Length: 102
Ligand SMILES: [Zn+2]
Image (cartoon, rainbow, N blue to C red; front, side):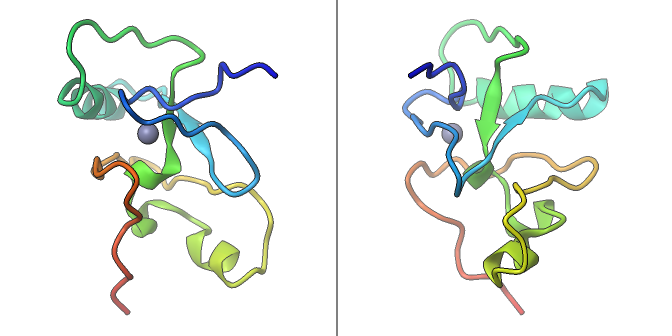
């Protein structure tokens, strides 16, 4: 099985499946730079962004997703979608974001 779709963060070995999403880096340079800075703070050495570079959905807070709630409630099986300008902030690998504030 090809495993090219994998999170870029070191030590994070999530691969894409039905319950998680991996996101391509954004086209917008300003936002892209923030993603790169996030990854670089966890990476020794060079970061090369390619068309295969992905970030796992767990590195984003719930408010970063357009359809997190609908998925949580089982209204949709569509993959998670990021809001415009969302940036990754969560680096605690293996930990899910805390229970969300109502
Ligand atoms: Zn990851």
